[in-house]
Amino acid sequence: MSAIAVETKRTEYRAFAEIESLVRAFEKAEIARDDWNHRGHLTVACWYLLCYPAEDAVERMRDSLQRYLSLRGIVTTRERGYHETITVSWMRLVRHYLAQTNLDCSLVELINGLVEYYSDKDFLLRYYSRDSLMSGEARTGWVEPDVKPLP
Image (cartoon, rainbow, N blue to C red; front, top):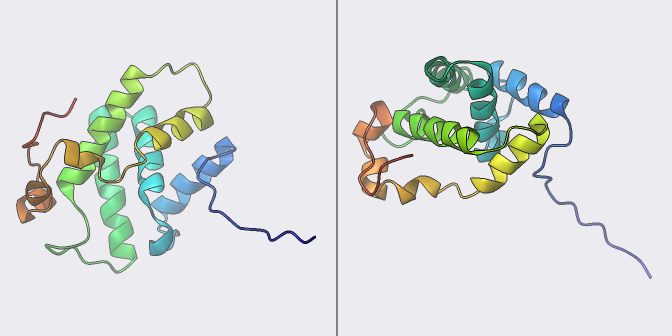
């Protein structure tokens, strides 16, 4: 009998160093565009919200995303690139998650739980209609949710 190994992409962090390395690589724009994903966004958002006051964390996330995109040669247009409403909404959701969660655990456990809880990339559509969220206005500035308020 022979076994065929199936490689699966691991979705959970195993060590603090993995998380710290991801944040540092993102800040230096060393993560390939295809590897910069929803999990990474949530991880960095959580890191910033744990390390900085909420307003500073949002500003740092905004600046870091814009710098990353710029260094990767991604120009923000109406269809792609930096999106203000998505960024601020996710920061608010992560902050809410942190406020509602027992923080008596390791950072690895905390972020793995956060990533699992918000695994649906379309989670924001619980608060926004697709048209509103994908509008040019939402990309360039803050737009309030039109389905239900964010927590």
